Length: 455
Image (cartoon, rainbow, N blue to C red):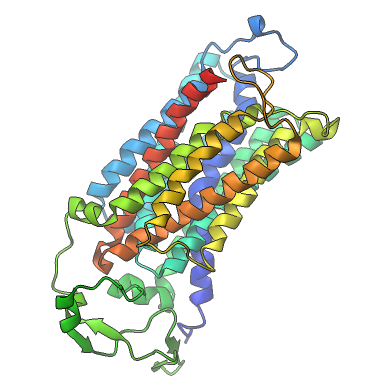
């Protein structure tokens, strides 16, 4: 018999892979922009004058529009419809459809067709990838919300790792000077393998005894809430609770023992929720609205300048030759994704500020300072503003802090929200937080168009 205490490490790895699997397909898809522009005869080379640059299909704009609309719409619908569609169908079904869409996209690399038809198929693919991606991400955030907070950190660390992989793929493609068609084939085949691995991990998860404790009973290791009202405190009863991530040791003979020094835990009678119904979506939102606004603010600030503004920054003499050619993939995308991953991973070690601290939303709002800071970096094509931070290392330093705070505060917001509600409402909280995450992405994407006009 496999001990539950032995397979908790597998649960951690699975959530990391699940997080990576939610974002890796789309990250690799947008890495192939050069391929799509080439297929659509869109001129983007820097040695072509502005008057001769053409983009008849407005591919970049349409890609943003057709990715953000379904993401926002279906994360919103998922917040209400998840109760009516089984979790396994939502998660496994979404993965299967994403896999099929990437198989189609990879196949089209070698199929010659008219530009209009190719554009139509590509736009449809973008819509459906993000539609199923929204359902998948919202459902997985609901799933991870049933587990202790550290698993939310691992899940979001996996999402950041997906960005690192896509940035590394772009970097290697630039260095090796691989042709766009061959590079695109690699970009599309990789998500197929990653999605298949993610699907297998999800199907294995319920069969791990440790995960089963949370999936079947709906228990979740919560911190003792300091804000229990007096009535709740008067109803405290000393009971032996079910094992948690930190105090459970399973023996292979089927017996279990509580080995943590604080194994004898307190649980309120009011907290025994077996007979209670799930709260309505609006009631759950009232409990998590601060975290919802925080995650919206984090991603709205980030997407306002990344990559629309940050991708325009050029080296100022320190980076020359090959380094100048890979400046954007290296200093923009790779630096951002690595520091974002570090920020998310840090939340598995410490949590500051606490979820009930007024300092938390203040620090989140303070990230808006990165918008003018990055707009004042060394961008050559500007009309109104002048460059203030021209040195490459100034840009790298700002990008590093920008990405670090993005990952840290986003991960804290997503992991704090399920802790503010009852265990059985954690899935609703996770689905709602995913909607507000998508709202932040959409608002940031819209802001980026305005900010580019202000340069």
